[in-house]
Length: 180
Image (cartoon, rainbow, N blue to C red):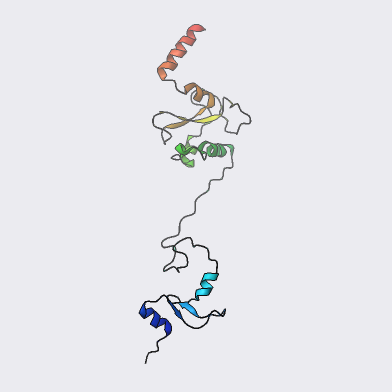
């Protein structure tokens, strides 16, 4: 013959609580049907809300299912050029996120391709940017900072090239030669 407990009877009748044995803390014996836990102990404990799921409900399965997530590779700059890459990418330059660190390394040059001056990648002190400081330049301004559309120029060449077209530069050079 099967033994029926108050918990099984309460469950069969659709109740959420029943009166059973007192808990180890001496409470009266009112218990939950779902997990046989003490109602008073449950209300007295301060439980923080779990990160996932409803508070107070046990998980039905493991929190993580699937292969482990790969750890993020952190780039730690050691040279002036690598520090320049970090400054150039920056946290605020969301437009340059498409350019990876490896792509930056392929762009590195020692001399400015337009003016021929030797470039410096060291961080400058003060408010005035040196003319030979390396800057990132868009070849075609309409395309944005995407691989294949960027180059490294000196600060001076980048400011001269800022918004001028080739025709304007040729006209300026011709007029400049006439003056001298």
